[in-house]
Length: 168
Image 1 (spheres, one colour):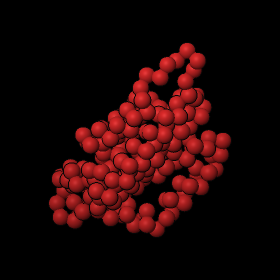
Image 2: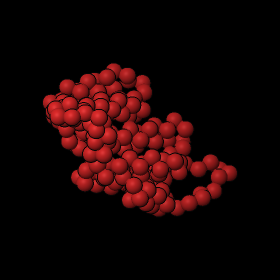
Image 3: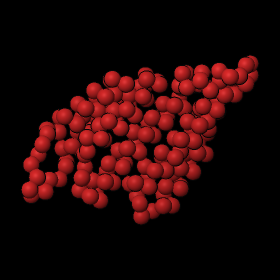
Image 4: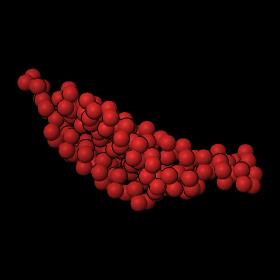
């Protein structure tokens, strides 16, 4: 957060730097709402009203408004939490639609999201735990066709998420 905020506020001086930092938090708050909407739409594609209701509720939640208006790293941690939720929702939706639960690219995205969340705020450690747990569950529940053989143990999926998160 501080690197991103410094990049946006560097051209300004005085109070304008504070406003530029607040803009970064505001943009993070808006992106959090977009990711929430995408995650809810993935889980309940037949109920678009539910995504609108959930996103509207979150957008009007006083704590979300307050965090998005301040210049601090909480808003960016919220974005990465929403990203982890959105990725897990997309994987769950895909596993129901296509019977394909876990792909190796999922480890990259979940590891990246949880690692960036951890680097933005240390209390985001729970994101890594959730991402690793989701990787284990989805890799373990992968449905195989009759001509397909299991190529890897379900341990490799969470291990991949953990390694990528720690590398970030």
